[in-house]
Length: 355
Image 1: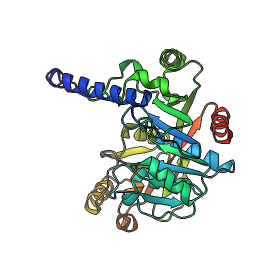
Image 2: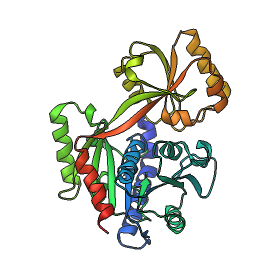
Image 3: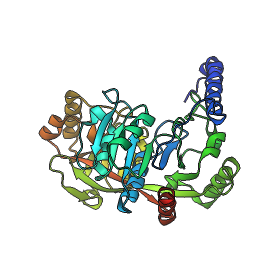
């Protein structure tokens, strides 16, 4: 966010031109000046209005596993942000993971790992990716990751995620805020999921948020209140899992390269862990061996009992570093949960089963 008055003045015109360009692109799709393509299978899109940090990945995993457990054959399509490859990469064929996190991007790799039985494919051109997959495998539904702005591909259910800890009343477009597009585009959503709703400050805050969404969304748009639960810790050296309670009171080093590291740290604090070392990196950070060796040395020097990373960071750690680490390294598992989970699941299934 830009706070300097001088910078705000200098960036005002470029920011307005950016906003005008965003609005023009949306209008071009709305008036069919740009072509929209449709896949044979139903498409469920998951996205947000802001840059990063609303908890899309656990939500995408929840949707894909809901469909899989109901007997469907879902596939996840992702752009594969910050991957080291170009073109199309098949991350999972539903049975095996076929590439590394560097080749697919950390989030698609994480989705493939946490959604066994679900195909995962990355490609900037998600229309072509979906068409290719339909010609190679049975697919009964597509889940689009981070696709609210991907207007080129038609969707049967457009899910918008909004972070409860970021007040809409203070939202602003890039570069003065985190909005990718104006708040008025909330009206494109078929359903809204308020993530981290457990952090809302009481009933008044919840009511205020609902009133604002009612003004910005279409009539009768369902709103779901959701949150993310840290459920367990996975030892990266031996793949065993332990409960959060096992680490209550222990001294740990918290290491993360995610959009909102303070939320990861807050979850560890709420689990009763004593954070004696904290290292924050840019979102999707890929760690070098020397870099993580330095973190290990610092953790040793202040007597940390373990290093805790996010699952996304676990995908970005060098394997040799994990194997040779002198301290145990654990990845914290985050799962999506919802106030009215059954209603949300019924909505997902109704879209897929309507044909």
